[in-house]
Length: 419
Image 1: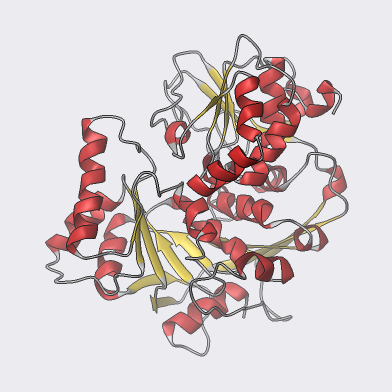
Image 2: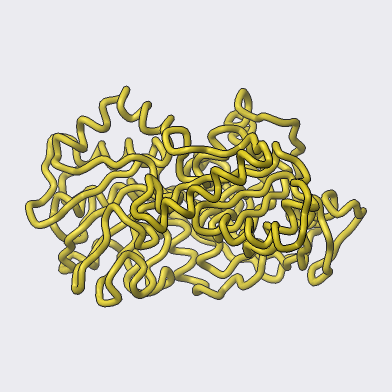
């Protein structure tokens, strides 16, 4: 079996599962946010559930329209707060304690290797970086799982992606996953487990792995996953709140397809509107002027992402025709960035630093685009109207390219700044 099949089998109480099989499996953690939890709460009440299956295994994180941007957002967030109080949920993260959910849960040691995690948010697939099976589900599935501690799954087929060679300067996890999606398309791994491996992955830091698994959904994947190794163990050591189990794929596991990539040929990559698969080398897009740059999100709002952007923009200024918004993904990241004086670098460059929030990524708040405006963002989606007006455009890149572009006033690379 593959790592994905092994985790699903273990949680279904079976010795073996096969792709296409329908199973019921026990979940280790359920999460929802201020957009998706209210629907789950309503459905939970509707089915007449008397109590949650485990108050320590349900995480409610108001991060999309929080801090509450208007009355409707305030009402949504209040539903999470009231339900958490009513059922005495341990994992409710109020503003001031919260962060972007997919950065916060691994950081807090609430997701561990071998877990089965579901979340009412498509980017729940992020936690595959820790060697867990995690996937996004609908709010009604979350409602029934909150009551029963179980969810149904169709066991996915697996696709293997092998990365070898030497990474070029400034190229990281974001470029690898954008390049991959550009290669296979937004439905290239439809309902499949995307298993990432190879010498490049073995030396890829955890933040790069989290970025790659985060965007498995942008290739249509059911989940993204990386077999845990010493980097995984080092990351979870000291933060894991529970015992964990390390799984790995058997040598004779079946894969629908295996793709190999020579990373020495992967350039700094940008996704152009209006699909993550519409990728081009950043260096070819030097004529694309931009109005806004966003560094943050569950894809690239981690400390190392901020360090990368700060390294590029240090001692420089944001172009007068551009606004730059920097969003640390959690309070802990914010605090550490402050200690390392990264926030000083951004503010001296005339960027603005926001409290942790998903904010502009989903066209929520803190950086909405007007008609005809163009943004370069370290986020994960660039569909029509994703960040605001339907006639605006979003390009996706890594933090170094985003910071360089903020200085240049157009899409560009750190090399153009002599870095």
